[in-house]
Amino acid sequence: MCGIVGILGTHEVAPLLVDALKRLEYRGYDSAGISTLKGGKLERRRAVGKLIELSDLLVHDPLAGKSGIGHTRWATHGEPNAKNAHPHIVGRVSVVHNGIIENFLELRKELETKGIHPQTDTDTETVAIWVNYELSQGKNPEDAVTSCLAKIKGAYALCFLFEGEEDLIIATRVGSPLAIGYGDGEMFVGSDAIALAPLTNKMSYLEDGDIALLTREGATIKDKNGSHANREMRTIRAEANRVEKDGFTHFMEKEIYEQPTAILNTLDGRVGGDDVRDDIFGIGSSELFEKVKRIQIVACGTSLHAGRVAAN
Ligand code: GLU
Image (tube, rainbow, N blue to C red):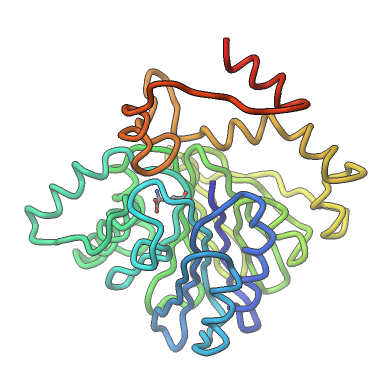
């Protein structure tokens, strides 16, 4: 499970994006990146490993701009390297993605017949290519994203930034959660309230199939049928560190109560219906498991009991 954040701000967004990504670190990740718009142009910085690598990179090679998106990646398609890290920029589009595009191989083949060849191993890049292609056919950003969504299948949260559009982020989700944050002349989007808590205490949650058009003035949300949707705005009362503990007295208590949601979110997009992805335990895991002859579970305490359940 990765993290997504997007900001249409009144200040430089790079440090704010990295800060928000830090608050999403608890979800796990293998690489990270941010993309901003400066003078209408898209730029990005990406780094493998911990967020400190991205922060170091930004010190030596800063990224200016008041509009931006950021991502912590947990690779499902393609190795965890800098090339495959998000944001993916193709032409006029920058995109960050949480989840899986199940039919990306079919889409890739279709693109290749149009003479368009992907540069990375990710499913995500296919989305960026499609949206950019639709823009090149004269569509506006909203219609380009809508056309792309009609083609893709899977579980996803996606945020788009567009060249020349300093006051626009498009966010959409199916399966993976996304929260919209309302500021004063600023707007935010993030994987959860924890990411956005210090930036604003006013949030709403997108529902499956929603598309949100964010400008600094606010958000216009359409549901999966294209009708205008009102998503209840909630005021998160607690300050950031209370939100991080979500009302629990300490983090261990919180983690215990979060286990059902954590398992659901981890398996989201990897198991569904009759479908179990064969690399559910990571890249190359299916080949590795084919060679396994015996499993030993070594554990003590609570893990011993969990191990005994697994042994059965
Ligand atoms: N499937 C995408 C990738 O492998 C996104 C993974 C994620 O959710 O971080 O790049």
